Length: 130
Length: 391
Image (spheres, rainbow over the protein chains, first blue to last red):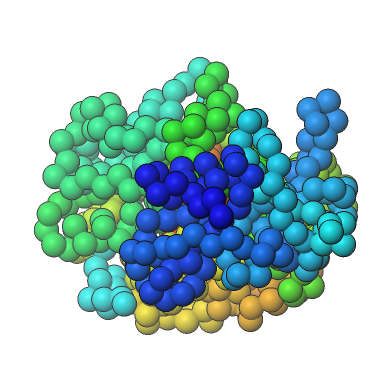
């Protein structure tokens, strides 16, 4: 397994892994809770050892908004908060369906796309993915 | 924790406004200075009496230095914390501590912005701030903040409690009806629930009428120890209780999108004041978006969690309703120069002085101000103010 590089701080290491097509979150070695976004200390117990784990990619839409944008600038798009099954929340975007069809409670699955040359985690409805 | 020894120990002795609405051709420090001068004069003081300063700005990291130089003051107490629009409510706490500790005698709290008319205005400053202080794990998804942060909160509140867009629209209409009673309010044209629902969508579930105004404006007030404030020309408005709380920065960092730090800040303020929601005559609830007053009515104990939507139905918080909220028209219809907290404070003071004309809440002796800051109800600061009758 290609782990995020240990020579970088967690933010840069997270992005370096994403740029290689791998999505990692952290887990605290002390309190065992999952942590996102990546940090140098645990926000739950201030533990110093945060290990990289590869999440299942399964998530649930916790909240949702459609940002309205003129069609000539790309049209409306979705911004969601996703609860990962590991127990952390992240901002992301649900793709593959109309932004107006994204619902709170929807089961989604992570996918890595390239955005402006960088890896980015987005989600698709779980029933659209294999 | 609240120290009840601070209850009533300080008071607001003067307030001032300048450049509210549009101030074309003026810079933000220029209208700030005019508001500051009006507040100092209102308190019957001169700038040589001002030995404490609380101020913040969304662009300048060392803004108190800009202000001391421009005003020509040399304060011994300087406070420049910026936790968003709530800052000028949050400034009460350090000001109270400094005044009661004898570090200073007269604190000027002041703010100004020309985001509406300046060439380098709201859009340009927001882009610059995002470069200087990014939220790196949110930014790639391009939330249109601040609306999107609060839209995510509103959507979750609607999902959990059945709050409707109509409930949100009630907040906008109540604000507009108050503004129609305030000759100084920026937006006074008629507004119906249907107008709000049918307006251009910005970030679902918000239309443009669910979002606060974008105006210019400056506001200032002067705080003193209560014994000194009694000798000033205006009737003092006493600080009975105060509390501040901050739990997160972004919507993704907010544990439960339906509960804000106002739950903590409010409890701290009530504890210091020895008062309860039933004792409050009027409220100024920072209405950056229509969901905000609904959240704060719940978190500050005026109704149960989840009942804020039905609570505001039928004009409850508008003129003639049973709980007056945002009597100047709020950030939705009166004035909103990017950070609104100082204007909420000033309206509460004017109401407690009893000089608000058509919008005056008759016989008001207590007011609660709740300042909101950040892109996701991130910081909250609650002040409970009162007249001498409430001391």
